[in-house]
Image (cartoon, rainbow, N blue to C red):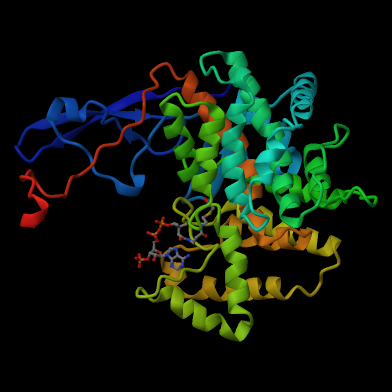
Length: 436
Ligand code: CMC
């Protein structure tokens, strides 16, 4: 693997308020900014560092994904996301994330066989679905059923056994589409559709989601390719909120199914994976182009909590390379489906143009992110908005489990335990209730 392990480059010198100095090693990765190693800071000086939101903190070493937010670069194991989206498949990217290299044909066939053969879920899991209301948000179902996998697959819970870890990874990648399609079918009151081994990963998911036992269903190859590309674009994204959640949960040695369920919970929020759903809700709320200025003004008003959903990113301050591919895929899908006049897409394009010219957005480097376009494609493909984040969870499962595996294999791995800047009352005596 073309993986350069970290090297100590120089030392930085920190002057403390008491005048003492403390040397901090400066570590250099294979690319990206150098980091100040503060691991011994508290033990040697009695100071913590303060970084809410972790905007300046590297929480781990990782060889999976590299992002340069200033340049709009995203790569997995050194391969640019644009190239992977064009030339690879989601399952090949899963292999790359898990094992560090692109597979040979024989390695891919073996991996594909494992994933295909693990796509069925235990029949008993069906009762979990039946316990939910039909109008339950599918993400609430996913949080529950993915966590529940740990109750079914006892032979893949020993995190110290590499064979069991691999089995857990296969199971999660294989079963997520089945569980996601079941969440959709349950909301409609339709029968669940079982996976079909002769289909590709994306075809199988579309078939389980949209086919009915009563009539023939042919998977449209353009839509299957678009689905696969959407999965590739969301497969991993470095140490974002949900991945950090998975790592933190896993750092206590919790089992991988429970860890991935925690990632799904974190992804659900509208500032993260829930944004693609929120984009559609926002476009519907705006309704017509003449109302765009009103919403732009609201997004700029600091007294109004409204934000332009699908704009801005913690890391990308130039453009989101995934958004570019997603924009092209969006047009391909709309053309294939004969949607020449999609009012929401027109609205989205006008909003994009106006926002990109507005100094508020230009000065803050707020560009459309991947979620801005994915919602429109998914809507055109027939997914209800409530399923958008479920699809994100399905694809991100590869990244979550690969990052979890990387962490578990790290010999110096420790439980994650941030500290705090305490601002509450100092010690005081308990006051009995009748004296308060
Ligand atoms: N609309 C209006 N103003 C915004 C927006 C927005 N979407 N995003 C950021 N800003 C402003 C923000 O108010 C702040 O202004 P000021 O400097 O005057 O106080 C400035 O831009 C910097 O924003 P921030 O909140 O400090 O940036 P952040 O890195 O903490 O937040 C974000 C990143 C993605 C949470 C945020 O841009 C946002 O809420 N975007 C909308 C939600 C969204 O689309 N999320 C999907 C992210 S991509 C998929 C994923 O990774 O899950």
